[in-house]
Length: 480
Image 1 (cartoon, rainbow, N blue to C red):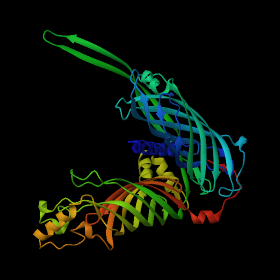
Image 2 (image 1 turned 60 degrees about the vertical axis):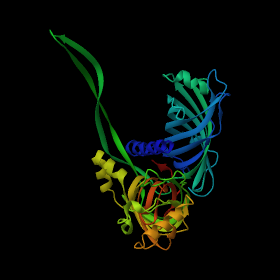
Image 3 (image 1 turned 90 degrees about the vertical axis):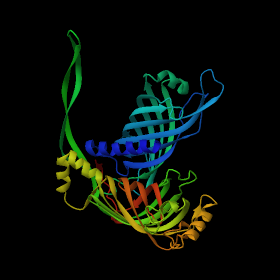
Image 4 (image 1 turned 45 degrees about the horizontal axis):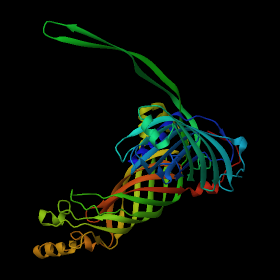
């Protein structure tokens, strides 16, 4: 749930940024785009016990998104026992870099340290009670003075969130946690640099947009009575409004890269409702080479992925279809070393191109080799893997397999029919969806095959564009 909230927020942020970006001026050496994770400590009442919450931070030029989540325990009024619950803080809005107060400036976008104070102004929501089922929430504004300490390929964001919440039906119960309609939340996040300026990032006009929408202005109900029945007629009046302006698009030079990646397994790929709850996904890591060009992407990587879910389903494995339900339900887990290739296209550009035809024409007529700075790729993957030893979840699993092959001598015992015999090169296929900002990619990945195993994960990849680093940067003010 928490993962879904910040991924949806991130996707909506990309749409907002790409559609309505504004131009401005940044000081040379300051990087305007970053993404990362950190910790924050909400100021609950002293009766509430809580460890530091996890905070996700996303910033692209003047827009930023911050999502925090965590657990806590509290005393219900009149109750001496502590109750466990959880909450989410969502801040979305703008940041203003205060360049006049820059403490230290980089000579270019990679060498040295750059320290700049910021002021964040956000729309803020706070929800509590996911575990207890209370589902409380309030909205308000958040003022967040911050300090960005930037260094090669990354930065540290130090900030103090001051959130002011307004009334609402949950105000009284929310006061049981905070004590008042204000929350003080200091946070620190370690972020990867989006390298917008170093990668030749540009924000250019992509045509005008215009959208008409209606708002209900009034409602009148009339009744007419007859001898045996009564009719009701509702008359509604609407006011029509128009929203228009200039749409902007962010691009950078197309690039080739070397990448490092890390991922966390999410869930088991279940064939059966009786699948074991003992499955635990594992972490993975790897490195790769690839490129981004206009709306397309390609990537080849070497990966070590842990925590595949292994099962042989007789309905899907050709050699077992004849035996049907005689094949036992045996499950296991294994790790694998893999070589994988991925190919995809930018779904985000396709969607915005349909919604904003002038934007599509602007990109079509753009000269040179370019790629959108914010991207949402979807695509397919394929490759080969070498699975390690399979660990069965139940000790009787191996005995069940032995009994099956004894009773069915016509079935050859092989890695296709016996998950404990997995080994050697085995092909795999998959699907993926990633959200990217410059060299940063957050990806959902699902892959495997019926004679191998299945794994889904969420991962982070950082792409190092070597030719851009060699190209260097000139000391000029960046316009955006």
